Image (cartoon, rainbow, N blue to C red):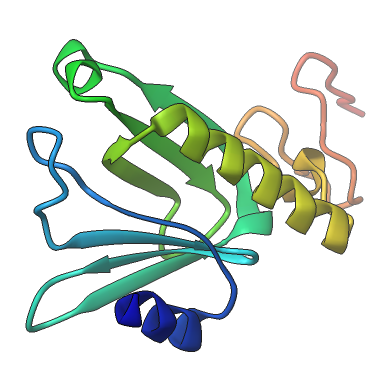
Length: 147
């Protein structure tokens, strides 16, 4: 319990925390911390490395439930984000993955509502929809105006 108080002091209000499981047991040195505003990955024992993603930047989530993980109640969740440091974040072998994904969905939606961000707001011009003439409107590659 003292560890949870320390985590709350360090990261603010914690929604969920979990560890990467090996054979269904949380014995790795990878901890996932979901707060109301960000997802933090903390790796290491003596030398710690932390990475975080602001939840409003997440634009897609997927879940894999391989047979070996499913047997021990685990699954892997992958998040895609518009974060320059971490465009994809993988929560490997977490316990109760459906519940964790539901918590992530709720937290991401709450942050998007707070900042009035929608998926289309985060999508940049893709390779097939470039703004070649600089007018601020993506050009349609099938319609070319060659004057």
